Amino acid sequence: MAEGFDSLLLESIDETVRGVLGEAPLQAMFYALEKHRGLRREEVPRRLGDFEKELVVLFGRRSAPVVMRMIVRDLCGKLGIPYQQRSDCDFKTYVEECKRKYEEKAGGER
Image (cartoon, rainbow, N blue to C red; front, side, top):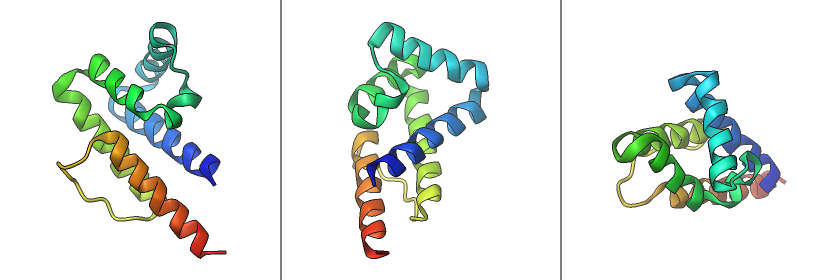
C-alpha cells in the first residue's frame, strides 16, 4: 500500500516542480538533494522532514511553502481527497495525513 502512495507522492513532486520551473530545474533539484544532502528521490517519502528542510534551502523561506502547498494540492487530487489549506501543520504532517487517508480508503475498498 505504501508503494502506491509513495509513487503518487513522487509523481506530485515531479509534476509540481516541473510545472512551475521546468524539467531541467527538477533534475537539478534531485541532483543537488542527492549530491549535497544524500537524499535520493526514492527516499523522499520516508524522509519527508529532510525533504521539507531542503526545499527551504533550495527555494527560500518565502517560495518553499508555496511549492509545498502545490505538491500537497496535487497529491490530494491524485488521492481523491479534498484539499484544504491549513496553517496548523507542516508539509510532513500534511503528507502523513494524506497517507493515512489513502490507507483508510484503500482498506475500505477491500
